[in-house]
Length: 179
Image (cartoon, rainbow, N blue to C red; front, side, top):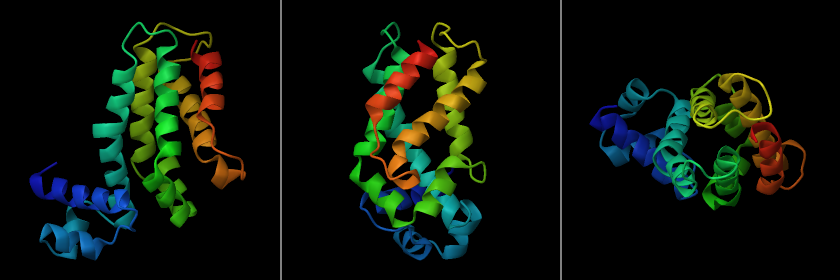
C-alpha cells in the first residue's frame, strides 16, 4: 500500500474511531486529495470502511490478542479468539459503527463481497494451524470458517437476535471445537 493509500485508510480509521460516519469527501479533504483519488486508490465507501476496519484489526486488535497468549498457553486459540471477540464487544466506536447502519456493517464484515471476511478467515486459520490439533478433525481452513461464524454470532447477537453479545459463551464453544 503506497503512502497516499495508507493516509486515506488512516483518515477513514480515525473517523470510525471518533464515532463518525466515514465520508469520502471528508477523508479526501483531510488527506489533501480529491474524491476520485480515494475511489481510484481504495474504492467505494464500503471498501474504504472495510480497509479502515481491517487496518485496525491487522495492526492493533489481532496482534494485542495474540501477544496476550503466548504459544504453549492452555486453550491458546480459544483464548485469543475470546480476547478478540471481547474487544469488539467492548469497543464503543465499533458498537457505534455497527448500530449506525447494521445492514451495511454486517455486509462489510461478514460477506465475501469485501475482503474483510476472507482476511479474518486467513488469520484464524493461521492461528488454528499453529496450535496442536483439537478434538474436531477438520482442516484449519474449514474449522476457521466455523469458528469465525460462531464468533460473529456472539459479537453481533444484538443485531441478529436481540440477545446480548457474549465473549464468554463464545469461548466455551471455541474450547469445545479447538481444545
